[in-house]
Amino acid sequence: MAAASADTRGTELGRYLKARRAQVRPEEVGLPAGAGVRRTPGLRREELAALAGVSVDYYIRLERGRETNPSLAVVDALGRALRLRGDGYERLHELAELAAGRASELPACSDHTVRDSVLRMLESMRPLPAYVVSRYNRVLAANPPGRRLLPGLWDWPEPQRNLIRYLFLHPVGRTIYDPWEENVALSVAHLRAVAGADPDDPELTALVGELVLKSPEFARLWERYDVCERGGGQKTFQHPRVGPITLTYEVMRLARTGGQRMVVYQAAPGTPDEQAMLRLESADARPEPVPSGHPEPGPARTPSLALG
Image (cartoon, rainbow, N blue to C red; front, side):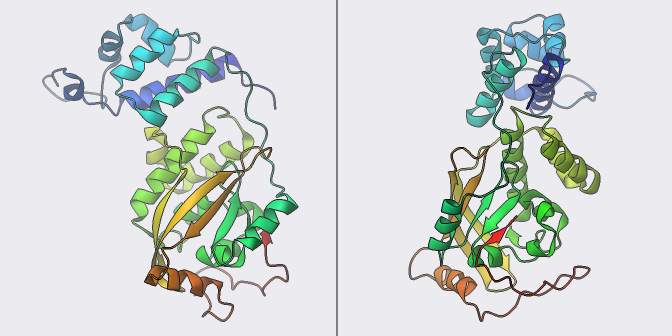
């Protein structure tokens, strides 16, 4: 894939600065809020420039993508002024490196083919629910309990089976996660994190364009430009097949795949959550209810793993 142009890279850095500037209130950085209504949320450009010790003109050029070679000291100063920590601070540096053309290369193009060895690993995980996703969260393969953990997703054609799309646009996806608002905020922040180095990737732009048009909630969260890499944690499901269930999960990156990840869920032994998880493995578990407006799922496939 060809590298993005300098203008595009600089613009992406500028978008990030503008979005993060909007999240910082003046009083958080020791500035008076001032009288009257502020025309824009968060810090003004001149306020951020003063806090970072750069000229207003320089900062404006940086935010508009006209300045693409900020020094490490300037990037550090902006990060401190914006109160960035962790993933957010790292993302600022990554975008500055990309804008300056110092990034060695963009990530390899996403590969939607799942290796046979990975498919065997998915099968060996049973009864733990597990699936493989692409860089931008398209579900590429799953073992049977992994399929049953995401009811309704498999009603969609293979190219549409994306976890972000499922969260925002599928009726089950909007009710199965508890709390939904927290899960979607983290998912959008993760999508921002993995998208930062290649914002013009066609798969990404198509997904984001669709969701911005169809989901006001996604559009609002995407504009915030929150960034968070997800490497594991805990999720609670209000599952239509097995009822409430809380599972921990781990995320493992798969080498030489252009960003594929394996996600594996588990429950503490001897708990009601484990019993609910084991019912996902049972072939005679009661069928998933079909959401209104969605087709009946087709007959079960012969292979135990679903490929996308």
